[in-house]
Length: 255
Image (tube, rainbow, N blue to C red; front, top):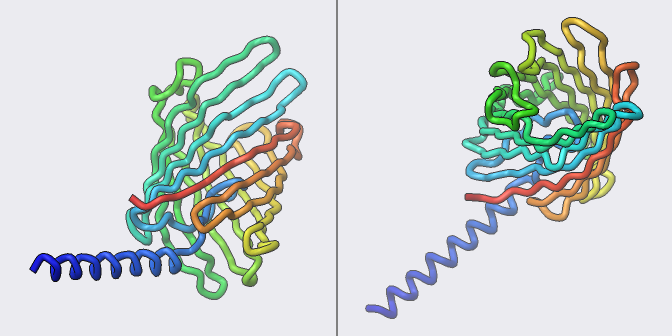
């Protein structure tokens, strides 16, 4: 009797392992919201945690710079149409002879799939976050809770190329004036593992000057669950940063 139970248990374990391998093969490669500024419309797979980690350096003027080390976007897939999101950032800002460092307010939000690609209709999702003013270091606390949202859309041009764009708005938690956001990028698969993109994006405040920027970057897919990225860009407007560069590493795992 014991021998039969052991055989049955081995058979069950075998089929579980086979199903797990089949599922892993069917699962598409990791889709990230970095390194470009254009968020992708794709949802993190169900019951997967996805962590998108990055470092960036931004030179604003001769006496002003900003370092973000690290920025972490944590995503968790609820189902095929909805994911939860958490953004944390540790920043070091230098202004003339003064240096400040600490955590920006934590952002909590979601992404939800709205439309599937069909003809001229792009794959479309909505991303929304809310910032918590007190969940931050003293130097970086905001005055009030503040939202941000964007619609993210993507068209498939070919097996190797896509065009994506975002439209949305964000608030800074200091005043009540929104800043509108736009992004436009095209991505291209150079090989099965290496991807490239080029992008134009900007910030249009309700009051004040518009900030237009340009960037480009590369991604390297180690395997379906791990990706490395490098990117850099420059400002196109008088108020834009001079330049920036960034390095990132993203991975996912099932709970």
